[in-house]
Each structure stands twice: as structure tokens, then as C-alpha cells.
Length: 81
Image (tube, rainbow, N blue to C red; front, side, top):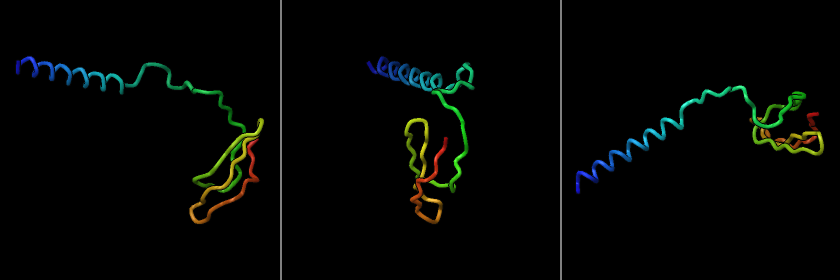
């Protein structure tokens, strides 16, 4: 009975390792595929920041608020067309 348990444990361990290795390998598909329907239209003209908020209304993107490294920002006048 111990031999069967040991063999089963070894088999399950090998299966788990094989599954992990095969799922983490790079696929042979083209890596230039981009998901979604993205289009670059213009650069953000505001100050660089973290923790910013953005949203869209129609075809316009609004970005603002956030933190520039020393100040909390509250400007929402910047739009990206």
C-alpha cells in the first residue's frame, strides 16, 4: 500500500510540474497581436502623474487629478481627442 501511495504522489507531482512548465512557455503565435480596438490619437498634455483618473464621453477622453510626486492635482481640463 505504501508503494502505491508513493507512486501516486510521484505521478501527481510530475503531472503538476509538467502542467506548470507547459502553461508558462511562450506560444508560437505572433506576439504583435493587440487585443481591443486601440488607436493612438494624441499625447497627454498635462503634467506627468500617478493615481490619475480618466473617463470618456463620446469620442473624447478626459484625464486629470492624481499626484505629481509632490502635489495632489485636481485639474480635469486636459482632454485627449
